[in-house]
Length: 321
Length: 253
Image (tube, rainbow over all chains, first blue to last red; front, side):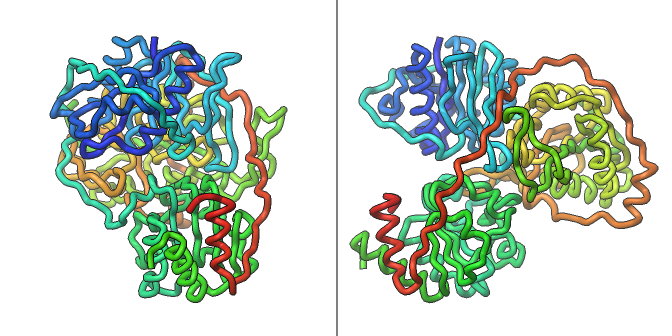
C-alpha cells in the first residue's frame, strides 16, 4: 500500500510543481498511515535520493530513452504498471500540462476516480473527499472519490512545499515501454525568463499601456521581482504582446502568490483566469475600474509615473541599485 | 485503423453557464442555482475545437463534422447554436452528466459507432474545470492523445499539432485517428450568421440513450470562497508604501 506521486521532469530536472505534489502526497500518506513513494520516468540529472526531503521514502525510476518526451499514452501504460506493482491506493499528479494529459487517461485505465484541480488535502474522516476549484475559480466543489484507487491532480501553487530531512531509496523499475505514436519534431521556447504557469509573481499589463513600445517599465518591474510577464486579451489580440502571455478565461489560467495588474480594467473574463492568485495588486488610473473590487492592494494613478517608482523601491529593498 | 476516404471529425460540445453568470448554489449547497443563468457553448469547445473543425471542412469540403453532447433536452438550444456555426449533424446522448468518467464513456461509445479520424474537445469546461474528457475518451478508445493544443494542421493522414509545455510549446506529429484538446491559438472565435442559423434548424440532431457506465466520483457539495476583505488603497504619490506592504504585511517580496 502506498501513495504514489508522479514526479514530473523537464530536461531532466524535477519541476517545482512536483515538489508541491510530493509534499502533498507525503501528507496524505501520513493521514492514511501509508508510505509516500515517488515515480520518475526517463532520464533525470537531479539527485533523486535527495527528494527524500519532500517526504518520499522510495523513488521508482523507469530509465528509458523512449520516455524523454511525455506521451500521455506511453506514460499511462508505464504508470499503470508501477501503480499495480506498488499497490498504490492514491496516485498524485500536479495538475500541470503533463498531469492534465496523463491523469485522466490513467483514471480511465484503472477505473480510479480522479479529482482534477485539487486545492486541499483529502478529508478521510468519512470516505475520501477532495476539494477542487470549479467555475473558473469562482467556487469550490467537494468531490467524493468512490473507487479503491484514487487519483488526485493537485493545482499548482495550491499546497506549500514542505522541506524536511531524509533521503529516498532510488529503485530502478523495469517497465515495458511502448513506442510513442506521437513524434515530437521540435520545440518552441517562449522568451520569458520565468514560465508563466510556474511563476510565484506575475506582472501583467493591459490596454492602459497605450502601445507595445511602452512595455519597458512593465518588463523592468517584472525583472526586479523575478516575475513572469502576462497581459490582457485586448493586448494579445492587438499583437502588442505574444499570445502565450495572455491570461484570462480564454488564455492561460494562473494562480501565483502575487499578481500585479497594470492598466487592466478587470473584465470578468480576465478575472476568471487570475482570481486564484493569492494577492492581487491593481494599478489603474480609473478609480471605477472593476478590478479594484477583486484587489487586495490598489493604486489609483498613472502607471507611467507609478510603476517606475515601484521598481526603484523594490530594487532598493533588494539592495540592488 | 485505416484512414477513412472521407475525413470524419467528432467535436465534443458542453453546455456551461455564461462567463458572467452569477455563481450560487441551492439545496444546501449541493446544486448549482441555474435561475436566471444564461447558458452558452463551453468557450473552448466553440471557439477553438468547433471553429478549427469548420476550417478543416472549408479546406476540404468532403469532411464530415459531427457534434456530440451528453445532456438532457435542455442542452438542445446549445447544440443548435453549435450547428449554426457549422457541422453536419449532432448527437445528443440523453443523460445527466454525473461525473467525467461517465461522460467520457458515453462519448467513447458514440465515437466507436461513428468511426472518426479526429476527436476534438476543448481544453476544459469553464464550469467543472476538469480537463479530463479528452484523455479519458482517448484511453477508452486506445488512441493517442494530445492535450492543450495551440495549433492544429492536417497533412494527409497525419496531424501536425503544437502543444503547450511549460515555457513554450512542442511540435508533434501523429497519424490519425487521434484525440486532441484545443485551446487558444488553434482557431479564432466566429459569430454564427443568419444563413447558418437557418440551416441549423434542418440539420439532423439524433438523440440516443446512454450506455451503462460507472461513475467514479460524486459532488458532495459546493462552497463559495470567502469574500475579499476589500482593497487597501495606497496614494499614488507614495508607491514605495505598496512595496513596504508587500514586503512587511503580505510577506511576498
